[in-house]
Length: 72
Image (tube, rainbow, N blue to C red; front, side):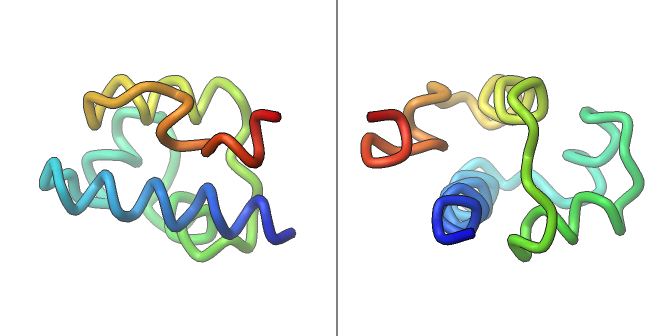
């Protein structure tokens, strides 16, 4: 659960930096805004494909989103 929260925090931070909204992330992932909100709150785990697609959308590497502690 802690790793999930760390990933959600990283995604939120990168979304803010790149000015990506929940609605645009939801459209990009083909999810509802509510589903994205649950992921961003750490209530639902981002799957691997969602992390890859999110990284592409916000213009960072997957490693940036998952962090070195999670990847190790």
